[in-house]
Image 1 (cartoon, rainbow, N blue to C red):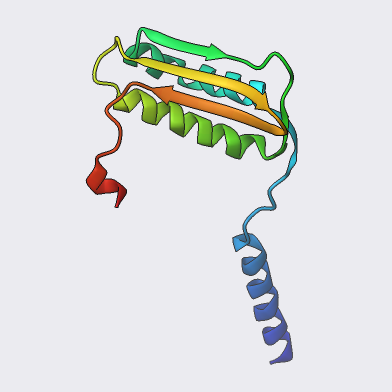
Image 2 (image 1 turned 120 degrees about the vertical axis):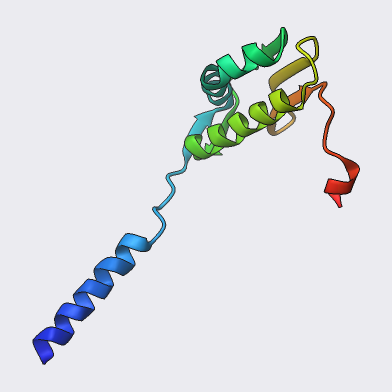
Amino acid sequence: MLIGTERIKKIIDNLSNYSKKPKIQYKKISLNEVVEFSVNITNNFIQNSTKNFSVKYSDGYPLVFGNANRLEQVVINLINNACQSLRNKDEKICIKVYEEKKYAIIEIADEGEGIDEKELK
């Protein structure tokens, strides 16, 4: 009986360890590199959505402490949202990476229709 209980405990411990969220790795990452990677991943969608796409990278090398994969996922989602909001290929999407005072900034602007006011409430 004791051996069976120990086996059950090991199984539960293994399942518990398996189900835990992986520890996120944080390190210094370049916002220029994050945006460049994200633009490369979404390039086909961008090209099919607009003729007016621009990216301006920071002249400096803005670094932030974070997780590159997570930040790339956010930027990719924002680019996809911008592409989906455009009504025609003449509307613009502009991305800027810059530093202002002590902040590193990624700015993504589009000329799309935006979110309906009803959905914002």
